[in-house]
Image (tube, rainbow, N blue to C red):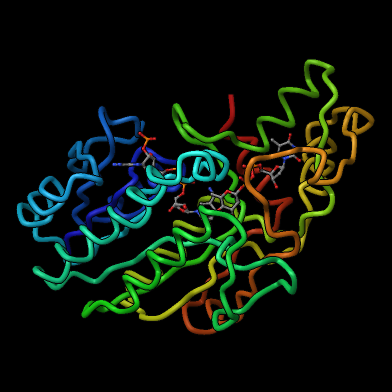
Length: 298
Ligand SMILES: NC(=O)C1=CN([C@@H]2O[C@H](COP(=O)(O)OP(=O)(O)OC[C@H]3O[C@@H](n4cnc5c(N)ncnc54)[C@H](OP(=O)(O)O)[C@@H]3O)[C@@H](O)[C@H]2O)C=CC1
Ligand SMILES: Cc1cn([C@H]2C[C@H](O)[C@@H](COP(=O)(O)OP(=O)(O)O[C@H]3O[C@@H](C)C(=O)[C@@H](O)[C@H]3O)O2)c(=O)[nH]c1=O
């Protein structure tokens, strides 16, 4: 079975490659922008492609004829999306359109990665059929991309997740655990919000959720996240305690004082009953996740 993974240089992509390539059931084609930044072995093909170029996307899919496409590629920096709406739309919606069109030609199963930011955060945690109502442009772009997938002729799964933590090689996104640990190790104070409610997701668990869906070609919406409801402050405090660092250096703040360009939904978090029952999905606890990440970060 051939699987094409987009966003392969990203946090999730770097964990999808070894998981899908490990036992020979899948032959993996990983695609990212520029050179391959994934540190994994060589039992997969890497192809550089700009997903915003319709011709490159069509050529890539036509060449490899994947049975499954896992579309993890995105512009995932929320504030960047707010400041550069055209780039956000071209990447998060345009690229998805090109991939859906190409997938329809080869009849590939399509697994799309989406986010809790499709919700307004007024009444989380949310299950799969909650009404979407995004409050920032990143979320708006993801709702539009979900609609493209939903209305396509494909067999599809839309996977929503939340505040993914873990370690990537040469990441283009910050990793919260390292950010807390490194600052506190240097005795630096950090300001962490305690008015956002999330179900933080260990990257390995998200990758496993995608594998469970791919194995079954399970269709529909799936919430794949952690189970514990935590605030970023809870996460920071647990991280500091785990690394035996001074929690006194962590200052509780409200999101408002971060003065971020993009609004964040306050109370999200996802309910994962459906994934537990239909897929046998079983995420790690945050404490277990910390252990795993601690073993990976240098
Ligand atoms: N991280 C999180 O907390 C959450 C993530 N998600 C979603 O999950 C998915 C994976 O997230 P994550 O791995 O953390 O995100 P990353 O930002 O780490 O990875 C996204 C990848 O997409 C690539 N990409 C962006 N634009 C293009 C393009 N034009 N052509 C080719 N590749 C491109 C990036 O390339 P480059 O490395 O060159 O920048 C990057 O490697 C995304 O769809 C994201 O929206 C949902 C909820 C939470
Ligand atoms: C930078 C910063 C972040 N934080 C908190 C806010 C946030 O909840 C958490 C992570 O910071 P971020 O800026 O990455 O948060 P954010 O951009 O909100 O993360 C989002 O990313 C996109 C891709 C998603 O899809 C969402 O699910 C969510 O994970 O840390 C602080 O408390 N203090 C800080 O100084």
